[in-house]
Amino acid sequence: MKGIILVGGFGTRLRPLTTNTPKPVIPIVNKPFLVYQIELLKMYGVNEIILATGHLSNTIKKILGTGESFGVKIIYSLENQPLGTGGAVKLASRHLDGQGAFILNGDVLTDINLDKLYNFHKEKKAQVTISLVPVADPTKFGLVETNENNQVRAFVEKPGPNEITTNMINAGAYYFENEVFDMIPSGVNYSLERGLYPMLLEKKIPFYAYNSNDYWLDIGTPKKYLEANKDVLEDKVNIPALIDMKKSGSVFIGDHAQISKKVRMLSMAAVGEKTIVQPGATITDHSVVGNHCIIEEGAQILGSIILDNSFIGKNSKIVNTIIGQNCKVMPYTFIEGGLLKVIGDGAYIPEYSII
Ligand code: GDD
Ligand code: MG
Image (cartoon, rainbow, N blue to C red; front, side):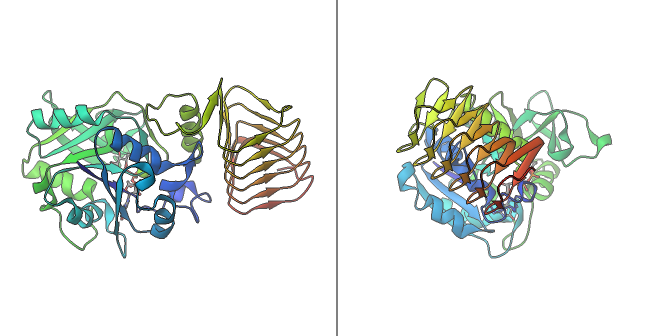
């Protein structure tokens, strides 16, 4: 079985974290986000994965490589200019050898049961099956109306406040029969949501919706990104992506991390590979520290994420904050995120700063 993951978006709402790192490889509990999707597809027998890339594609390639280390084959489909979700699927479909495929939006953390979706799809004799989840505010998503037989009746991408007829939205996981790829135009910017789906309805092509009760989160904003890390720590996402970190109680520890005996790690925390945590430091309240970081003595990390290769100086206190990669937070600094603060990659924060 084959699958396509759409990973060519700009991730604008996660800036500055996504200025140099594409959203699909931003780490969630120290694993590039796409690893969760790769592991999900693998769980359901999809071992050839086509990544539909554009923006920052080389960075994605550098991090994921051929897929061998995950036990799958990754093929890169590269757009010279953004082709939209539909155009990207069309270009990637050249690698499918005439088969149908699963398609995933590359920014959704989910443990959706793809066997159930596929069986539903075959049972309904659908051409396209789309997964649905309920949300409180559908205006940021694709609203999907269905009939009592789960057939899609209407698809409204980013509905206005007075177009809300249901709280069920497109969860961004689909199965397409092979014939569907022929219905998408080549070489032009084309949207699945605004082009293909309305067209399927107009032409009365069998288009069905599978209601998913599984874990689902769009990781598009800093708040959702923090939530995703928290939910993975709490084991709410049923994907075995963290298997290579050691778990002891409510704490995850990466290989070769050096954690001093006098460190307090409480109420869920993770520390990545080769990270050094010095005596008297505290890492708590669902905090995640990345790989190759240094947390100096007495530093306190509360409800925060520190990405790879960052340094947190002695007696600093970081609360409710996301700190990007390669940052230097010098000693005696206090960063209190309030609702949530994001510090971009490579920042230098001098001693005694209060932010
Ligand atoms: N290759 C490629 N090329 N990928 C793209 C392009 C493109 O031109 N444009 C977007 N993508 C990828 C993004 O990287 C993302 O993984 C996925 O397609 C969806 O695009 P977003 O820009 O994140 O769309 P959205 O979040 O506003 O809405 C979509 O997702 C919702 C669920 O989270 C839609 O599919 C909605 O209908 C859906 O409800
Ligand atoms: Mg999105």
